[in-house]
Length: 174
Image 1: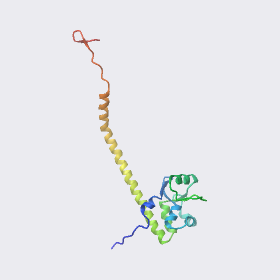
Image 2: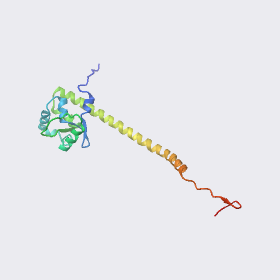
Image 3: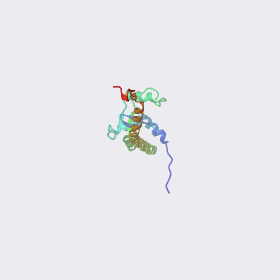
């Protein structure tokens, strides 16, 4: 019999913490620390002790401008107060790598939920791309049909040349 598991963290709570920065879907170290229930400095220290596991395409530190821009976009900021350093951003691969350095049972369960959230978002994006493609095909298909209609309307709107009056013995006046 298959054992059902309940979600440790609701998927929508995780998805709200996935941002699009530098053309990547990422999660911030501050949010990850909250989900793992560890202090942000503990998470960052563990990552720094294992720096070789986190190349630039797995993790990067936000610039001050990126951080301020992101913070201004979020109405109720979860990052109140002054900070010494900007948070780190972890790509999906970086989050997966965190599971190799954070070994608590909670960290493992949270990582599973995060991976599921990334997969869910990928599926949503794929379905949106498919929908956009279908819409583009329909527009191309119906643009040709509507062109005929618009051409007919333009023809009806074009002024007609006035008929010349016949003078004399049925001949047109030249």
